[in-house]
Amino acid sequence: MINIPINLNNINCRIRQALATTDRCTKDIILVAASKGQPSEAIRIAYALGQKHFGENYLQEALKKQQELSDLSDICWHFIGPLQSNKARKIAENFDWVHTIDKAKIAEKLNISRQDNQPPLNVCIQVNISEEESKSGLSVQECSEVSTAVAALPRLNLRGLMTIPQHNATEVEQRKTFKAMSKLLLRVRDSSPQLTTLDTLSMGMSSDLEAALQEGATIIRVGSAIFGPRWLL
Image (cartoon, rainbow, N blue to C red; front, side, top):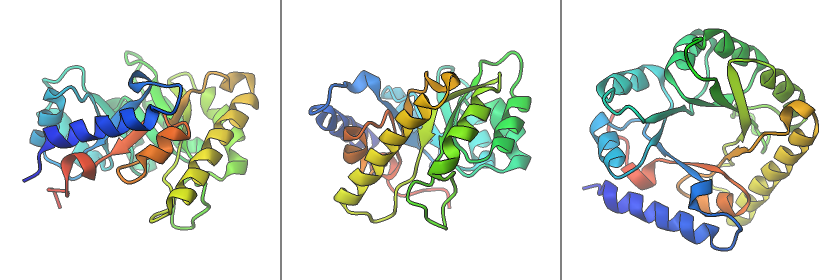
């Protein structure tokens, strides 16, 4: 049986240990519990233990959980799945963060759909740093131009960059990828006065969070190491 309290404690221990050799502490890091395929009951257990940030990949699944968990007023919902333009309105209305912007047009649709009575939607630009054909994301060369366009949208708050590293990469390869993302964030930040406030690197998951944190991640997205296998198939 999956023990969410023990698993969540283990992840927080891993975070502290990974940061021990850096100049940062746990308050600098957002742990997003990736709850795709998990029931609302599992999210409620993690929430009761102090976990406030949850990441979902599929809109309809997320909306159902949000309704079931509507009594948790300070829960923070992150959309971490592929973005489709026909779902932009619902995503803009029902999430606090979107990590996967890979086109300026998608950002524009999110901006139009965000309600006036809501705070600006926190967003990240997804980068295909390893240049894999099977993955979404902007190329390194496109990042500054698209970031400048997104930063100009008034109902979005561009926070930084996100990436999904190559599957089954070695630790050396992981570190190389994450280091490249840290350098890219600095270059994007320096490319325009509109981008100097970017402060977020969303990268690192269950198997590589240590490498990500040591190379500058500020958000890690952890699913299986907290919740175990998906329940909703």
